[in-house]
Amino acid sequence: MKVLITGVAGLLGSKFAQYIIENKKNIQVVGLDNLSGGYLENVHKQVVFHKLDLVNESLSELFHRYKFDYVFHFAAYAAEGLSPFIRKFNYDNNLRATASIVNQCIKHDVKRLIFTSSMAVYGHGQNKIFDEKQIPDPIDPYGVAKYACELDIKISGDQHGLDWTILRPHNVYGSNQNIWDKYRNVLGIWMFQHLNGKSMTIYGDGTQTRAFSYIDDCLEPMWKSAVNKECSKQIINIGGIESNSIIEANNILKTVIGDGKTVFLESRHEVNHAVPTYEKSVDLLGFKHLTSLKMGLNYMWDWAKTQPKREQFIWPKYELEKGIYSYWKN
Image (cartoon, rainbow, N blue to C red; front, side, top):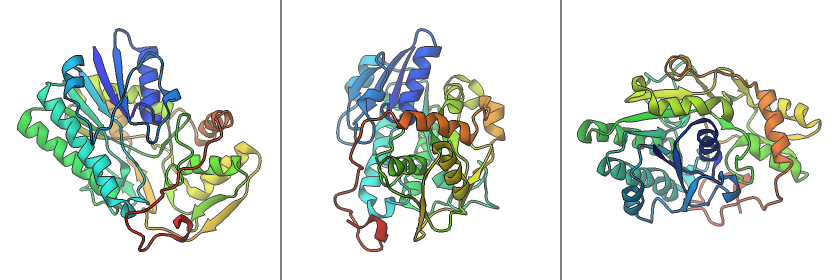
């Protein structure tokens, strides 16, 4: 069996590739990444790695050579809050890149495409709970791009017979996460800030709620989303049986670290409460919430302390300056 993982140098891709190699037999793992947000050292040595840009480079030769059974499309630039200020980049890297993957999956008769969408498609949701049956109503360009990808994938199934599963992960975190990006992954941002002698920042009053999900709890369910027949053409939330406010998460991390200060900044345009239903992931994927937030942050903090010192990534120029938050101004 041969599988393709896009975004293989990022959190989801690198940890999933490692999981397959260490726990499944007779599977060749091919990984793609342009290394714009992930790091080559995250990629398992047994992954057949190709540095490739999904937007600007052809995938035809790669699909022809390997004849993949399953494709896991994880590559994305997931920065909801920043996406209104980098619209073109957002749609290129999330929507156009996915269209390239879908085309190749259809042409080469891939058994199933597994696409990681996002909780961002829900927008504010209904009754503060995100259920797969709800009609998505995203509030930012990143969520719009992910929802558009979902619709395109569904159409490809109806018109071209492509089998698919769409996963909607909820605030997945853990080792191999990019903690050097100023705009995404709040837990990683806090760790970077503390490691560099800065106060941890919270936007608004910190009462926003999130369902943080430790990466290791998501790996076997992601595999099952490909190989289980009952997952065909299903949309499934993954992660998030427990939820915490941002203040609670920050206090837990400071307990783990044993130190730390927090400052509150102006609020931004964001979803206040992002809590999913989880029953479908339990029924179809066997999802189990095994790792508490405190336990997961202990694991991630131990990893973060061993990481090389890198400069924080800051966008050199936004596509749109109007309305940019004071803390993101260059």
